[in-house]
Length: 246
Image 1 (cartoon, rainbow, N blue to C red):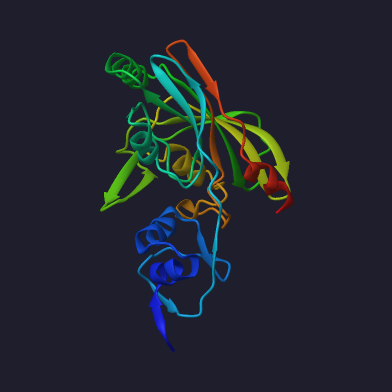
Image 2 (image 1 turned 120 degrees about the horizontal axis):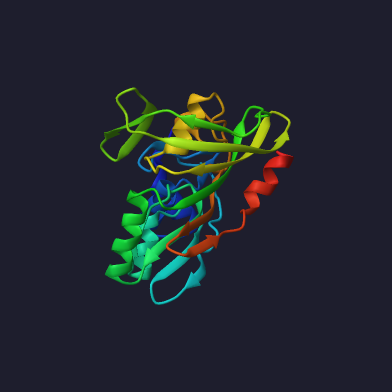
């Protein structure tokens, strides 16, 4: 049985460079036999056919002399967008999280914005689809979190030795065994929403790291953010509508 590294086969199939093929796999948009290809250098059958999930374009929501607000698509890192725009990040979103991402156009404003985050003066509202039925009234999750980093991978869990973390949950819709919710966070710990929802037994759909069922992407979207007199919204992506039919 002839085998080859996944990224090399993908490069041949798509007529692209090995580097571009590896980048697509690393982004998490390449599938083979209905399953996501997780390791670019993994050996697989030479006759494997790949499917590449499309990546939405990066849209500018607002721009002035201080700030650029981006509607970040899933599968693109915050750092990639900042590098392309040649601007400094004010905050970050996980690679598979879509929604409002803010970049600073000058150092004075960047420092003001960072201070606003540090003082919990930023309002952040997310939309998520989770596994399980959430039918209660709005409630809060107040559990300290600790993040453990191993190489390039970070995992966050509830721990009495962790940092304060507060998430406010509001049910929006129940569809079968899935729930659509709104999440407001005052603290901004690494993977806060993902770890908090896992701890409540309702992980985000598509979040394989934290126990969510397999989906085309992590169904977490940064819907709205307000700081320093600014307020921006990013409309929900198509996947958030399609989930009701899945």
